[in-house]
Image (cartoon, rainbow, N blue to C red):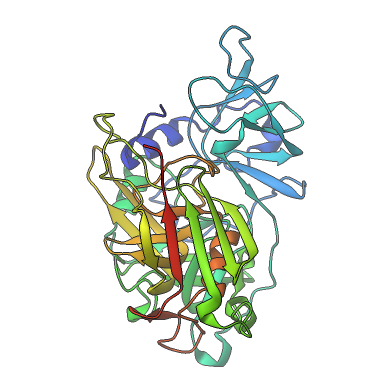
Length: 387
């Protein structure tokens, strides 16, 4: 059973993990970070040159000379800190002992890393704009492994407080979506200001009203085509979603034809503090509905022992009361095993597809990127036979 760590523990351990890797060329994250002198975002670093770049999502992760964690083999050759970047060659099936369902490892030029803790990312830098289009703010999507952030104003969120406490640089990661309300040019580089509340147009629910500046080259402006409805010609009543909680999969159907499939990470079946089996964090089974959507949302809940504070969770499609949503997860790659606090985690790319395909349909018009349709959404059937 994987041990759950609080968000404070994660930041602390991740900070201690900096510099643990001996392969300097891949340590783009390994910087001397000081809050008292960092008033502007750093430029994008030199990312690894592979088509897929693996970002280590947890602290103190083993780099192994073979794809197994069998202690008899003793395959560990180094430790990687959080946000360490790796050249991703391919995924291979290994031998994972300890009760974890995922047997996948990422093969890199230096060795193997357990795939569940490595986010697959890409380096797709953008040509940033130098002023707001038509004087209006815009939604943007991170298209590089990460972008550094510089905070403006009053510190309010638990997420940022923890980063300051453990001297861990705040960043946005590949796949996150944010609302940009200002553009400036600093030393010849366009920078975007992320408004995490967006005056009610961004997060809305759960935001702390903070502002952050980032290198605009790491953020792609989201266009109408990015949110355009998939299969608009299909009768919305013919669209249905099936979630298999036993096998941790999701399928989308148009009539009887399956048009989309992905692996998921649904709610845990145990309390992360006591380790006891419980329904507290379980994803609900039964007939559900995609009744509410928002492009990006701050998700904060729990407490110091078993809590989380995660800003800019992308492409949220809510399917049940209590804040249960299908949304992108950039903090792990453990799809295929239960992991969440009740939501249905999928990759940001999968979350975006589901967001676009299901009802209610969303546009970028003011007030239309966050819509509620309590009685007429897409039907979601969540099935579970095992406990």
